Length: 401
Image 1 (cartoon, helix red, strand yellow):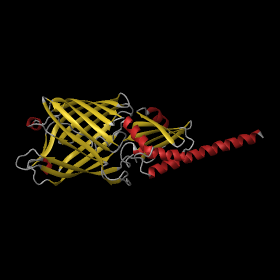
Image 2 (image 1 turned 120 degrees about the horizontal axis):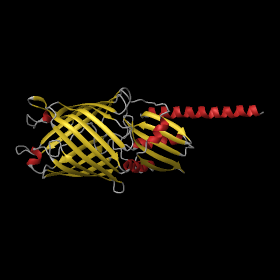
Image 3 (image 1 turned 45 degrees about the horizontal axis):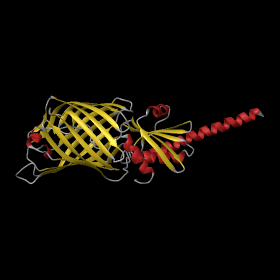
Image 4 (image 1 turned 180 degrees about the vertical axis):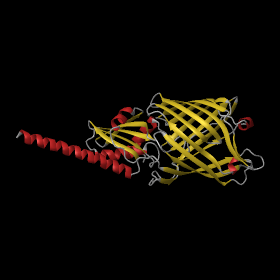
C-alpha cells in the first residue's frame, strides 16, 4: 500500500515537472514568435524569472509590458515576476513585478545579478548573433549662416548595417547618401556620399550599475579614432559617465576623402538625472571637447512617453551657444523583424537646432562631440530605471499603449 502511494506521488511530481517544462518551452516559443530575442524563462519558488532582448517594440518599456502580460497568462499562480532586458546580450535593467487582483505593482532597478544567475541554467531561445539589421535613417540639415542664400539645406538617407557576433559587441557600417542639397558649396561635406559610421563597439561589464565600453573606427560625424566610456549608476535616477576619445578628422569634400592622423584628445564627464514627477531628464557635461576647447553643456529634456523635447546651452572658452532638440517616434509601435537580414525604419527621428551665437564658436568648431552608434538619442536605448518604471506602470494601467 505504501509502495503504491509512493508511486502515485512520484508520478504526480513527474507530471508536474513535465507540465512546467512544457509550459516553459511553450511560452519561450510564443515570445520568440512575437519577435523577442535571447529569451530565457525559469521558475523558482513560485517566482518567474525571464530575460529578453527587444528589437521589435518601440521604446525601452513597451517590451517589458508585453513580456509581463504574456508571462502572467502562462503562470497564473506566480507570486512575482523578475524580468531583465538585454542589449547585445548584456543585462541593463530588472523589473520586479507582481499581479494581484488584476492590478500590477512594480519596481525597476539595476539589480540584475540574481535573476541572471538563476537564468544561467536555462535554455536560450531566439539567438540574435549574426542577424543583420539594415535601418534607413533620414538626415536633415538646415543652415542659415550664409549671406548669399536664405539658408543651406540638405537631405540624405543613411542606412545603418548593424550586427552582433558575440556578447556585448556591436558592428556598425553606415554610409550617408545625399538626396537633396543643390545650394551647398562644393567643399561642403554634405554634398557627397560619405561614411557616417564604420566601427566596432564592445561592452565589457556583465551589466548592472557599472558599465564599460570601447569603440574604434570611423565615428559620427567626420571623425576616426577610439572611444572609451565608463559609467556608474549611483541611484535608480542618477548616473555618472566618463567619456575619453582620441580622434582625427575623416571627411570628404570636392578634393576627395581626407583621413587625418589622430591628434585630438577629448574627455568629458557627464551626469544624467531623471526626475519622474516632472518627467524631466537633466544632463550636465563638462570637460574638453573634440577641438580642444574647455567648457560645459546643460540639456533639459521633457519626456512625453515616446516623445522627447528639450533645450540646451553651451559655455566654452568664453563663448556660448544654445538651441533645442527632439526625438519623435517613426512608423508604428511594432516593426516586423523576420529572417537573417531585416529591413526597418528607426524607432525615432532625432534632430538638433543650434543657434551658433557668434562666428568664433562656429569657425573654431567649439562644443563639438561625436557618436559611436547610429541610433543615439534620448529615447532609443534609454535604459533609465525610473523612466522605464514610470512608463511601464502607465502602460500596464492602460494609460499609454
